[in-house]
Image 1 (cartoon, one colour):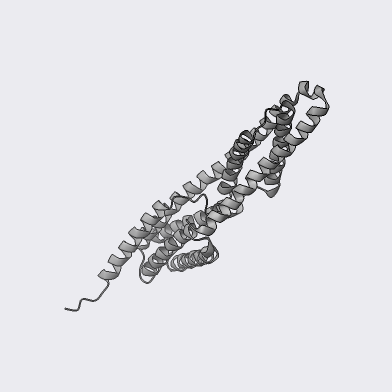
Image 2: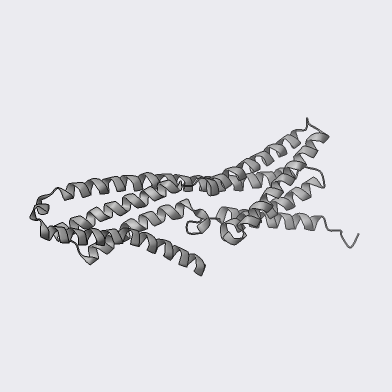
Length: 272
């Protein structure tokens, strides 16, 4: 894994860990100082308040995690759908006359290569997205030219349907991956709820005198790892929660083999 990626992941986790750990210590120190001044705090319903705060935090975490997990599953299904659409379009392109057949298949092979690059290298993301859109625009221009030649052709109709499915799938994947995000306000509220819940827990530790360094660290680690997972699932471009690209890689190998065989069959025979 890339070192810079590991450093970003470590920095993100450390930030979340401190967001949880610091209020626990602040609340604990405040609880210790007030517990010594007033014995009535020993009998105050602090535990009930803390339980309510943690219940709210747990519900909020579960609610947000369900959103990002569902979106992750959607991205996985769209990936499989795109593999099917590319394969179908490549096969149907064989029904076209030249030069549409060769040009379409070459563009689809390049398009597949770009789709894998998007999942591998975040630095090439802008170019890959731009070039992918250019390829789709070119393929759609082919469908317009073919339709102008014969609008009643069933072959052209099938090809147009495949290109349309490919364009729709691309738009869905880009929107789901890069546009549908948790609003910053929700993340901010999550951090605020976590901060005050942990502060209340620390205060309870201080008043009761049951807190310890080990318990504080375990508590901070558990909640930090859940929030870290939410952020990584919500931001796939960070590379921390990548989809398994094996179906697309398998398709890439198959298309390159098919294109190589097709190119060899078109080579002139020197004995002729």
